Image 1 (cartoon, rainbow, N blue to C red):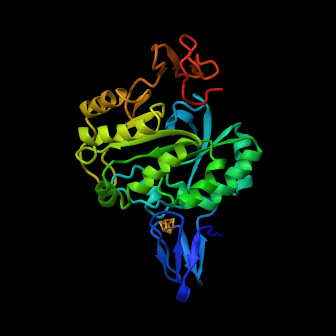
Image 2 (image 1 turned 120 degrees about the vertical axis):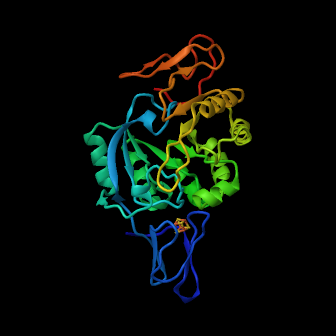
Length: 324
Ligand code: SF4
């Protein structure tokens, strides 16, 4: 347990958490929406500091990050909380239900990474924003050991904590769930605008890729996909975009994303974005030069990487990402 970094004290032992845009007003002995922060006698605490629900080693591509050190292994850890409660949550057993945890201090995390020769650590699976103090302290320490950090997040964070954390994070995958606030409100119990703001902030400051899970009948319309693609293209058409196939899960029973919707999303996006991938399906994960179409990264163990100094060896086109 740690004292929370972002909150304000209010009369009558109430507090307001200022970490994410829910800005929860929390009475004495109560928890915020995420269930990870508790007011104890007028002080707000991060209850899940250093408590992990899962520790495993994944390929970088699984985050998904396709333009960030292809083929590398990343030590991946997650907490037991989230500030959204998406009806389709693919990890609801650890993000929404009481899951058992074990302690992994920032120092112990470095030791595990070094023992397994991992040069990368990812805060993932659930919502690392609700683990803020631990992610911040761990990331600072990992940097001292030259271990790069990855965050897989819903992007629902207030600007001040985001700006404090960003210098210590090397790559992010942000889940942009829809371009409709009503989708965020009804299905995720969140809000759209803060996520868009986070994406704009992060885009210029660390490596960024975006994921959109296409939920049948909810966010998979042509207009929603076009709006989403336009938003990313206006920030930077180089940002890699992952459209993922949805499967019925948790409280959402709509049928899985159809092949035709995935194909449509890819076709729409390819008109505006340089790198578009499909996830949760057997699909082409190779990187091609957007200019001359030369094959630049072929996945495998090890992958074949033909990019030199972030440029296509054939036509010199600048390729977005970090590869060596
Ligand atoms: S981090 Fe948790 S407690 Fe804080 S505002 Fe967000 S949901 Fe509420």
